[in-house]
Length: 97
Image 1 (cartoon, rainbow, N blue to C red):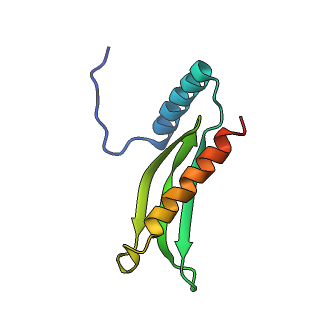
Image 2 (image 1 turned 45 degrees about the vertical axis):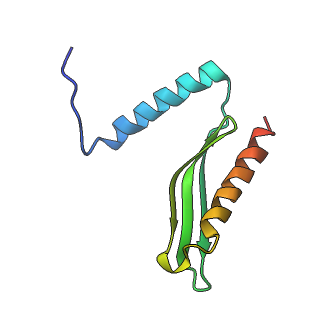
């Protein structure tokens, strides 16, 4: 067997294969095939992003990978509102199975 190689810039094809293999295993073991990307954004009147969230949902689970609110809008409740929206979508999707 060849040695383990840590890669700072892995091939997108290798990463896609890795993700596909893990997802297929998880699907086959759990029966859940409802995984989807999750993103939500808040924009100002000019259309510029002032807050956003990204992650995924799967099997009634939600993972937020990134949550950001521009400095001028922090402590205004936008982050809390984004998390609440992600939770609501996750709960709604988990009841559709």
